[in-house]
Amino acid sequence: MSDRVDPAKYDGLIVNRQELSDIFGVSLPTIDRYRSDGMPAKTIGDKGQSYEYDAGECLRWWYGQKDLAAEKEAERQSAIANLQASLDLDGGSGREEFGGNYRVAQEYFDAEIKRNRVEQERGSLRRADEVRAVMEGVFKTLSDSLQSLPDHLERECGLPADAVDDVEQAITRFQGMIVEELRRYLERFPDQQNGVGLSDAA
Image (cartoon, rainbow, N blue to C red; front, side, top):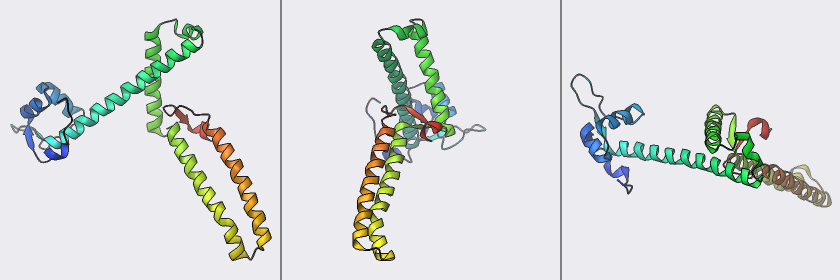
């Protein structure tokens, strides 16, 4: 199954345990392990009745697991590459932290990735690109509101035209200041793969 197929084409195709193992090209115990890991079963085997599976649902689950594994491996390799680059940029001095042992360094970063993932699940850590998106959304809402303020003041509050011009100029200055502050803030998190703690974003 080197090429992906559309799981939707096989929704409703009911297969047994042996047929599913043939589809995936794995052993029967592996199918049982997949089920224990969360692969959906259409009919629960009990009292002599065999397990039955919806091929489309199982394909969808299987692809999801492969994608998740690939994502985790990419994170791990990225962490290792970042470590190696950091050590090289430091002229090798940083290697002393791990005694020059890449295996120890790799285990350390594996643990860091797991810790970050747990903190993300708990809501105490956010990806830098998520923080950027929120901050940019907040700025856009604020900017749009400020842009409409002069018209509101003139129409609803009877502000004279010359005063409205002063307000517009002030808003333009304030927007420039906000943009600069936002830019400085976002530059603190240049790597979109890094996480941002809630205390950092405060």
